[in-house]
Length: 370
Ligand code: TTP
Ligand code: MG
Image (cartoon, rainbow, N blue to C red; front, side, top):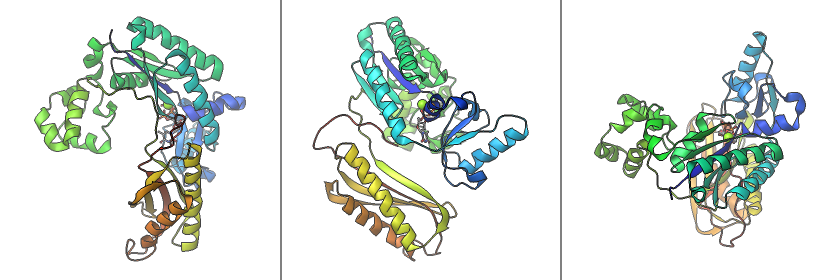
């Protein structure tokens, strides 16, 4: 029996939920993210619906830029973008229900983020049967949740994941094992999960832009440059991926960050905000079923956008909110004086996250994770 894997990814997830819940917004360009404050806002776009993407707006874009792109479109006679705040609890609830729908059709699934899952469809026995099943899953998500999903089907997680992205939104793409190499060949190397901007740049310097260019690169050289990851790249360029579908979705880290209204070096403001963030993180650990952490990571972004992270690993895991506050504060203090901040730069953003998570108590599978 061939191995058949599907990857489901919801379309413009947060924005699609808001459009569904606010009928007046339907058909309009929509952004979910920080408050744009007439262009003065300082956070980022979480997601944009497809109409807003036509204006050049996408996830992680500064919200002020999204605002300016909306204004520019408006001046051209196009509709202005509707800006909505993030309602994470609502999206987590919808995510949970979607995963339940998927589980009715495929018993063995791996939730890979708030809006995506891998499904082991080997049991269907053929690509035709797998495709028919995926049509039914899409239909159930549409009728029960009023949302569209895109699905890719392939011989492994790598191909399924890339395939789910090529026909978005509302797509269903099947790539059989013998079509995988041909399917990958014309794609930019960036399409391969694990190739980020740095690797892309390194490869571009060597004139490697498409997957088929990468395929010409000798294994030895990739290994020399990237170590074990080089072998991984070599295999991925050929559509090979053995990684299993892992039922239990465990976030690797849980964190919060905040961009301040004004850049500041005021210890009271920074301390208070950091404490509030630590409490939120601790609350999310509790929500996930008393997950414990060992490592605390503090991220500081200065006014000039220089961004630095510092971490501390505890000797033993804990779920204590107080320990988190204390450790985060200890990591922050050097940034308030010459130790980590010799030029006395103001701070624009603080983030805190916990890593090396451990669920000794067992319990239900974990949901969200941004
Ligand atoms: P994605 O699946 O990456 O994006 P999407 O579902 O909005 O759009 P697409 O149709 O291209 O899949 O992420 C899922 C959700 O996660 C997204 O709706 C919002 C959130 N998110 C962020 O908050 N910040 C980010 O930088 C990204 C990429 C996603
Ligand atoms: Mg998505």
